[in-house]
Length: 370
Image (cartoon, rainbow, N blue to C red; front, side, top):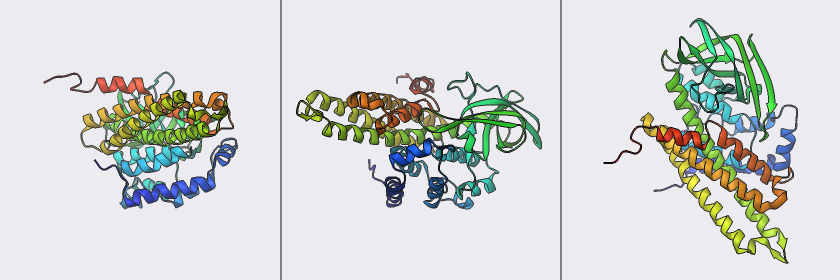
């Protein structure tokens, strides 16, 4: 099977990497994280200029109609550079809008970089169960209000609008809520990996229904599977950077008059890291190919298998890298600790390895023999 990228995909990757190496260095990222905003308007403008916000949007709305494999290329580079801008939150929100339909004007503004989105899907105690929803929607389609509290909303404090999951007449439904509308309260904070998240409270906030009645769960599951595939791709980029940083450290750190990379035991550990990384890379590619599948069962199986394997690999690679760095592996001054923290949170976002193993097992046909 040919895993090489098309010319256009490689150009996207090269453009992103050149920008990151020039303008989004490790020190620049640290400064952004510790700023009051926690994000960079200049970096966001560059992502828009490079066409990243337009990439997953249909051509009819001014986008490039990029598929999940195109997005895999982008997410790997963003992961490699540990970019903290609200890109993932926005493109995941755009996926909801595409699947629901009826929001073409908003999608065009997303493609132009004029609007940032966030997905308010999780609540206190829900853990990884997206169906554990206490938020409610009341009223008529022309006069709907959403009430409830959503937790760990990625880049909720930077969003112009939210995709919100809520229950309406005992069914799961999705709604679009403007961030600056009445009844919305946002508490923004920095997460352990340097990104921003928020607790968002809705108190009869005016909301626009997304999708047809009865479609809420299907859209929610399909969109978050797409998001999980993107997170797998980002994890590969982070692991690539962490593996390279660890290899460089082993080449330069001296012990007993020789680089510690000369020690066979450490070479074996690097080989194990490489095997985990390459297995995870293959699964991330498979998820990107299959997440757009018309067969929901195949999509669920492949995405959950990938999220579980990538999560396991991220944990192994991250822990080994920190140990091989010694005490320096947990300091704020070296990229290793930042990469490890990002891998950890990626493994927990939209379901950890245990959650997706259980989901994989629950799919029809598991364990059956001919």
